[in-house]
Image (tube, rainbow, N blue to C red; front, side):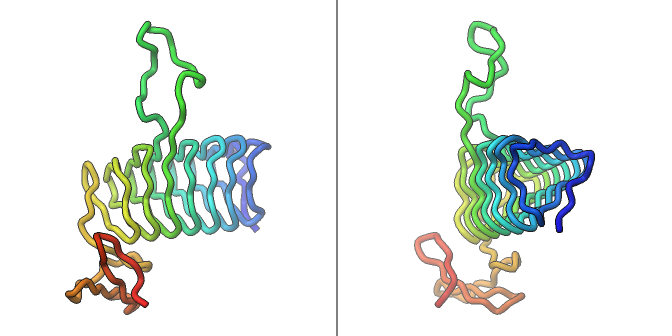
Length: 196
């Protein structure tokens, strides 16, 4: 059974699984969906219509703006930001204040099992691949392949990681092994997949 803290600001139009938890001062907007066992930490923001799968963790003060799509088992670290405005401006060229009708939101997609490190920023529109790992403080400006470890500003792939999150050990000839689980992975055409 989940917990919805009394200080959380949860829209009655949000779809939250019974096993999900939303903690102190977090906000979950209209038509957002939180799957089974999701945890939304203190002060986090989940925007209108954000879709979140099962078993996700959104840590304290993370900002997930609509129309983000979050897969199953995704980790979003403390104070991470998923943006939604490709060309942000407070005012129009004539100086008038922009309203929500003056722009089209674009989203960030995070695939199953991926992790976004603390204070990382994903600049929409981008997709972070399955089981990828975005290092803390990175700025993601282009799509991240499955199993990639990316770091820096802008983020670049520096290693491959396995499902356990550990950097893989290069065995040569495109074969990589997880030092934690022993799982084998194969690199082909700058993509990584589990070895059969």
